[in-house]
Every structure is written in structure tokens, then in C-alpha cells.
Image (cartoon, rainbow, N blue to C red):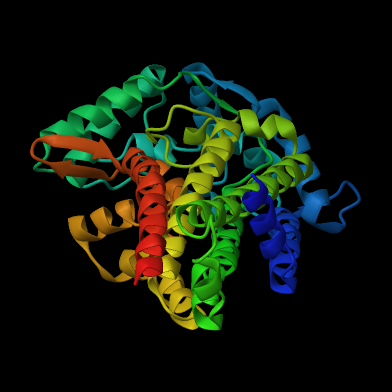
Length: 415
């Protein structure tokens, strides 16, 4: 315990460590606030003056305008919204809402817009995937709205995984088990979660930078030649170094994630977290949770990803002889999922992005985007949804790379 305390003190004495931790905390607040700057509303008041609102004022205005749409998304309410939409457009002789005269959309369509989310997708052509215009949808079919959604996930998976019936079956079963009817509480948008993803990725990079010199710095300075000769200079010291790095990284991520979620939900409104994932992303999203649940699940998955990445970084640090080489190789593996997701097509890219330690919080390839996607890993007749694979891989990699890091350090000491 004394060795662990000294290792914690040694790492925290570094000015770079405190700069990175302070920057991570600042970015967690900034990333929660930035989505509010994208909110914009424009309308004409009773006096005929044009009013432009941005930020929190825009959020408050839209929440007030869409207050009647909040609540349980029953087929009856969706049908009423579709009928009102069709009546409005027909009265102006247009087929799309962007062709309406100025001010009409804000006055007549905006209040019910949340209930229209996903309607076109639910009634998409099962063969081509092309979504119809809302004017082309028969309101009577909406009485079986959730049955239509279940049929849509079946047709979608036939296009996504045409040769994998097991993946199709699992997706349909997962969607059938989601809680219905859905709920919607206007005010929050997916940008909030996108910025949570960015925050998680940046914190991961900072933690990797802190962990990279843990072993290699002593090799480079020659201090390890002395430390290895002490009574607790091998396995005990290696475990203490690893534990200190994991504790600092884990605590930093937990604090930053908590600050981000608390700040973002306070700005947009806590009631928004009760919105079903399907009412913010695809109407046939497989995740059975609301936005609040998705925030916390992504934070937990991000923590596992950070710990797995730090363990892998410590393994590289124990293998490399200089700080520069351990840091450079660690950062390459952190950025690898981003590059792979953009350059490696098909199943190979999906597999690589699912098993790399940094994938959980990576840009474009994180657990967040996997939760709102329909990709499965398929092997020998088994199909695993990619979020499960990512989380499972991290849970295996944490003890694996922790063991390899300590073992590599001990073997280095013997050489």
C-alpha cells in the first residue's frame, strides 16, 4: 500500500499530469455547453417582427412550442400528427414542408414535429429502403404503427445482413423486446451525445499520455537499474505502477463524464433524458433504453475502454526503452479505430473496430454509434451485436494487458 501511495504521489507530482487533468475537466464542461450554441429558432411575433433566438433561449422556445407533443408516443397521437400535417400541406397546395409559406411551419408543424419523427422511415419500401413522403402515407395504417416498425426492422436487416439469418433473427427479437410505446420529451438532440463521445475520446488521449512514461521513463533515465535491485523492485513495484496509472485514469474519466452529463442535462432539461432512443435516432434502433440510460451506458463503456487502453499503453511502456517510442506507439493505437472505420470496408473493419481497446470512445467507431447501428459480428453461425462485442473485448483486455504489462516489466528487470 505504501508503494502504491508513493507511485500515485510520483505521477501526480508531474506538472504535465495536472495540466492534462485540468484541461480534461474544462473540456468536459465546454463539450456539454457547445451543443447549445447550435440551437436556433426563427419566428414572427404577434406584432409582425422577426425574432431570432439562439442557445438556451431557442431551446426554451422550442420546448414551449412542442409541449403538447411530449409524453407517450401512442399510435393514435402519431396518426393525429400525420393527419394534421397532411391537412396543413394540402391546404397550401404543397407536398413538402419546406415549400410552406414563411411562418407556417413554425406555427402549425413545429408543435407536432417530435411525433412525426421516424414515420417516413417506418413506412420505407421493404425492397429498396426508400422512404415515402408523409403525404403518401395512409393514416389508417398508423393504427398498427409499432407492428409496422417491427416489419421495418425485419426488412432493414435483410438488406444489412442478407446472408446472415441469425443476425436478422436476433435484431428482430431485440427490437420486439424494446419497451413500447416510446416516449418523447423535446429539447435535446443527438449533438449532446456526439460531444460526450468527443469528450471521452479526448480524455482517453490525455490518460494515455499520462500512462505512457510510467515504465519507459525509468528505463530511459536509468532509475530502473536502481529500483529493480530493491526488495519490492519487480512484481510489487510493477503492480503499484500499473494500479496508480489505472486509478488516476479511471478517476479522471469518471469525474469528467459525470460533470459532462450533469452539465448537459441541466442545460437541456432533465425531462429530456426520458426520451426513448428510437425517438432521437432511428425509429428501429435496437437499444432498449432512454437517452439518460444511453448516456450512462456510454460513460460506463467509455470507462472500460479507457482502462483497457491504459493497460495496453502500460504494456507498450514496459516493452519500449524510451518515452517517445511508448507514447508514439500508444497514440497510434488510439487513433487506429478512427482510421480503420474510414478506410477498411466490410466485416474486417467492423471486427477491428470492435476489438481494439480504444474503440469504445473512438470518433466514428465508438460504443455510442454502435448502439444506434445495426452491425453484428458473425462467426461460425454466431451473431453478436457490436456494442456487446466492444464491451466484452474491453473486459477481457483489461486483465490481459495488465498481466502482460507487469510480466514484461519483470522480464525486463531480469535482463
